[in-house]
Image 1 (tube, helix red, strand yellow):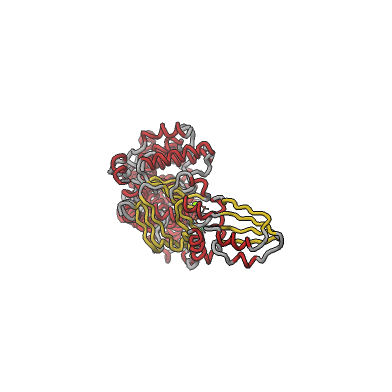
Image 2: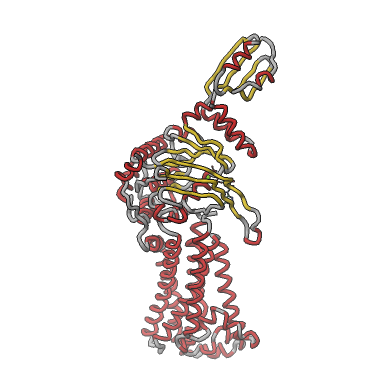
Length: 281
Length: 321
Ligand SMILES: Nc1ncnc2c1ncn2[C@@H]1O[C@H](COP(=O)(O)OP(=O)(O)OP(=O)(O)O)[C@@H](O)[C@H]1O
Ligand SMILES: [Mg+2]
């Protein structure tokens, strides 16, 4: 008799989550944070780019660089600093840009699953009619879109100012640098998200991705300085990003392909584990 | 199968804690739990802290994967059917946490989108019933107000099966009554309700049957009415002279015999015949028999020594019949 009542009153077809429902929810609640980050990244890019003409004119830069130790010059990429590409290579794209995007991506990646799980707020979502893969992929996609937005801001602001200040740098060079920056941040952010999804531990996710980012930066620098350690630049994601000097020489396809592969592999490994394990323990 | 809403057979769950290189120590939270909840019934799931209620429930929701045993619910196994099964369930977590920045209304509408929009139309009505302000951010809500959000999201899409982990915690008596009304309405609609609690009194009014879990094992499953019978009577006797306790201790249906001078108290389950006849051999000055509260019985179950749980529960049941 109960079954009859159920059929009469409760409609038979059970409704599951629409595609991208979680994705939309995440982006909605991140609106404000995304806006603030975009402003910060825009400001940093704008300050650096608008300094270029001033520095170029006074030619102080060249003498400043000439007085630096040779190793330092190479690590920072200052040997090309006189050209627009070289200047951007060692400023916006060399340190502060990647630092900001990596902090953003790794922070988001470690928080979105592991952080939510530790705070207990993932439980309601996970017990709704949405599969684990759906939750994982939606949250991954949301993070990717967030990082892509920041990379787009870097590109747009830099391009705008380069044109406004009449600096001679091809858009394709700027695009090459931006795509590299994007993929580096995506790779590290995805590693954070995947580690967090695989373990449920936010701190571990944060430490793994941040540690890897720092190690690859150091490996890139060491590989460039010490002859015997040149092999480091072939394994360092940082070298995959900047080793080919994208702002001077354009797209470094093998490097970008390696970063993309790293991103996809990390995403798949995290997903495989996330679907298997106990949540919230 | 069709008339069973939840069937759990020999469910064992180990919590493996610590880093991977020290994975040897596991906590066995469930030691072989058996449950059968029929469709359309309100079923109480009772037990003390740490007994394994939430663990069992979280296996039902596929948050945890069983170490051993089987779980079958309306329409299949949690891990196999996944979202399609959870679409027919409303769940209220035992420890409810929600992101703070959303308002109560935004949270509820978001959760409804995860059900393809089901339940959105009932949010306003239920919020009014539970006097919940939908425009306040979750962060600023009191524990009881958060619990209202939890109750509403569990009921709003009119699920076939409600799984509620300590649903009334944090609710004041008025709202507890409102909640119990909601449970009765759901049952009248043909829904099955499985709800956990520490105390019988919270589920007594609505539940037909209850299972009592202790240290990861079900120690009793019964009608609330039968449980009431099991509770038995507290008998107090006063004699003209001190009596031998052993004489009473061996009597059928008599337990917990305590003698204090010429007074004797015991717990009587079933017929009083043997007790009366034995007492009549002495000079009885005073006699009183009092129905025990159901809570007392409940406390008995909670106090059973861990290792003897199975045997002891059989004893309790045997005495009652
Ligand atoms: N994440 C975990 N890791 C290790 N052990 C756990 C974990 N969660 C629960 N336990 C253990 O499993 C046992 C059962 O816990 P559970 O939360 O199911 O109890 P409960 O009946 O819901 O208790 P309460 O009434 O306090 O909510 C307890 O001994 C607890 O210590
Ligand atoms: Mg619990």
